[in-house]
Structure formats: structure tokens, C-alpha cells
Length: 464
Ligand SMILES: Cc1cc2nc3c(=O)[nH]c(=O)nc-3n(C[C@H](O)[C@H](O)[C@H](O)COP(=O)(O)OP(=O)(O)OC[C@H]3O[C@@H](n4cnc5c(N)ncnc54)[C@H](O)[C@@H]3O)c2cc1C
Image (cartoon, rainbow, N blue to C red):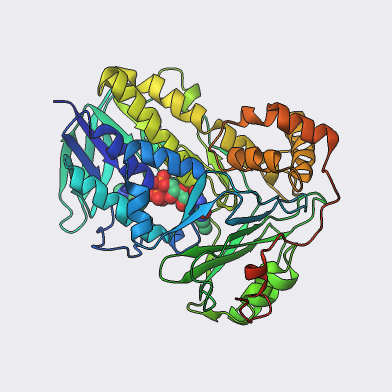
């Protein structure tokens, strides 16, 4: 029977294991951390403290790999976030999107709960061995084929050779795949990096009493049109009646220094004060946690001339985009679905690795283009200047987003593209092109399109 070795037990690694499990019962996941028994934080995923919206594209991808996971998440308290109905989105162009409901939805829950439920589903399916507190040291093989990995047990320091037909690197942003391949004489082009210097500051709040269920996800994007540094904010309803709230800013924004300044920032340093107003009477449950792991970074493994058999790189290890656009989990699910399709066609075939790798890189191309063209608007972004394509895309995107404030069909399509539930080509859909040409039906109101019930929470008093 063919064997698969997955390096890294984060979202991409777990889903890669799920993709392989119908085709082989010999899958090993090597993870540096000890896996917690429940939905708890762990060292190898510092980003898990910050809001993680599983966008509609990620939900679709996850369900293809592990049917029933969404229901399991919802049963554990995760929130179903319908595109339109449960989403308040203010893109950088400044006009809030129309909120007409569609049948697409994303999931609001802590990252710990998401990974925990996915791990449980995989354990129940069987065929996967988890080797925790263990890390890869080097690849086994040569410039033409990888046959396994030398790993080190972290508790004892002993090393061991693990052979496999296919090795999948899913060790996230810290992946060493480039260096490993280099060591074997395989030249990998340097990583492309586009870095807007975005900083995150996150606090957990208790949802205002009465708003524990049904409160929308709020996304307020930074305003890049002036090119100046700008703030952004988002509020994600999650399990256990909590909201995970992040504020952020591009390079040059001074971030809230302490807990007291968090609310101030949400009210006055973000293009719309809505989240600051919602939080005015909410009880904070945590201090402020920070992250700067936001650079867009991708390796063009698809441009390596002679890719070795038996080795594939997936998830953030291959392409990581600025998390402010909420794409990473969906890109990981796309990587895993590429694997699933390849295994379905030819089983676990080490000689298919180059084709699989090219498809994984292709699957991340649209998210990369969307994230980098947005980030390149900011004057202080490092790693490139906007190309003609970036500038055209932004101008077109602005017109589409303006139209989407009062054209529900346009809002539905553009949200699904942005959340990776539809290919970027859908931006050429006749309804979208017509919207871009004709503009909004009426001037955008400038105020968020809140329901009466939601508005009641702004004043701190509940409206029945
Ligand atoms: C602040 C922030 C907010 C984010 N918000 C969102 C969001 O709202 N929506 C969204 O879709 N995405 C979001 N993301 C992106 C998301 O976190 C990543 O895209 C996603 O985690 C990628 O999954 P992965 O499995 O590739 O990497 P990871 O989840 O980072 O997993 C990598 C795994 O490999 C393990 N590992 C690392 N090195 C080794 C090693 N040498 N040996 C063995 N194991 C190793 C780690 O312990 C970890 O378990 C956010 C990211 C950040 C930083």
C-alpha cells in the first residue's frame, strides 16, 4: 500500500491527510507540538489567538474533504455566517455592501475549535497516525526523487528515518522546503514577498447580553485609496458567546499601546467607528494580543524546472497571503482538494508530484493577486509596485464595490469571489460588468446597513 507522510498538523496538513485517507491507510502526520486533547491553543499556532473566519470557499472545500464537519462545528457552538444576511462588510472603497441573503455561508469559531473538530473527524475516519513532538530534520532522497524524511523526536532527541511514497510539507509560514530542496541541488527561485507591514491587535470580548447568537460578522477594510497608512477592524462572533475582535493598521499606523487604547483605535483610527460603538459596553475577556505575520509570501515552486518525484508543498508553506483578507484557510482547503483530485485520478503516485505542485500553486493564484493588489495601494508596502494589471483591477474593483452597495446581485457575486467560493473570472459576470458600468442604483448611504435589532446594541440597550 502507498504511504503518505504529512509534515505539520495545522489546517493544511490535516486536510492533506483527509484527502489521502480514502486512498491509503498509511498516513503519518508529523507535528512539532503536542496535540491538545481539546480545542486549546498551542505554541506552533500563535495566529490562533486572532480571528479566523472560515470563508465560504473554505467551507465548500472542507465539506468536500470531510463531509459533515460544518454540522459538527455548528453543534459545538460555531456560528453560521450567511453571506449577506450575517455579514456587514465595508470594503476599502467605503460603501457598505448590500446585505441581501445568499445561500453561501462561512463559519465563525475559534481556530482552536476548527482544528480540534477536523482532527476528531480524521481520527474517527482512521488510517492516520499522529506523531506529535516530532520534527523533520532533512529530506531523504536526491535531486530527482524524495523517499521520506529524517525526523527527530523532541522528547528524546533520537532521530529516525520515515520512508514514504509521498511527502507533503504543510509546516506553514516557517517551512524550510526551499532550503531542503536547495540542499539537494534543486534551485528554487527566491520567495516573492509583498509586505504592507500590517499589524494586528486582538482582544476577546463577551458578546453583549442578547447578542450571543445572530450577531453579524463585521469587516471594515483599511482605506488604501489615498495610499496613506490606514486602520482596519473586524469582529467575529464565535462559540461560547464570545466575539474575537481585531484592529490593525498598515505600516506607519501607530497601533494601540495598551488595552485602554484598543477601543479608542476601533472608534477613531478605522474608516468607520461601528465596531468601536458596538464594543462600548462589551466586557473584555482578554488583554491585547499582537501579530505581524501578515506579509504575502509565495514560492514559485511551479517554476522549478525539474521538480522531484514524491514531494509536494501545501498551504501557507507554499503561498501565504495577508490574513486581513481572510483567505488562508480556504487556500489550504484548495491545496487539499488538488491532492484529493490527483489521488482520485491515479492513486498516491509519486511521479505526479510536479503536476500536483503546479496545480497547488495555480489554486493560490487568484487569492495572491487579490491580496497583493490591495496591499500594493499603500505607499509603504515593500516588495513591489502596482503593475498595470493591479491598477486596472483596483479601479474596476472600486466600481464593482460601489455598485454592490445597492445592487444585491453584484454584492452576492463579489462576496463569493472575495471569499473564494467562486473563481475570480466571475468578476466578468454580466451582472457585475453592468453594475460596474452603470454604478450604484442610488448614492451609498455611508452608514452601515444594520437591522433594527442590531442597531439596538449600539446604544447599549436591547431592542426587542
Ligand atoms: C493574525 C492572523 C489572522 C488570520 N486570520 C485568518 C482568517 O480570518 N481566515 C483565514 O482563512 N485565514 C486566516 N489566517 C491565515 C491562517 O492562519 C493560515 O492561512 C493557516 O493557518 C494555514 O494553515 P497551515 O496548515 O498551512 O499552517 P499552520 O496553521 O501555521 O500550521 C502549520 C503546522 O505545522 C507545524 N510545524 C511548523 N513547523 C514545523 C516543523 N518544523 N516540524 C513539525 N511541525 C511543524 C505547526 O506547529 C503547525 O501545527 C490568519 C493568520 C494570521 C497570522
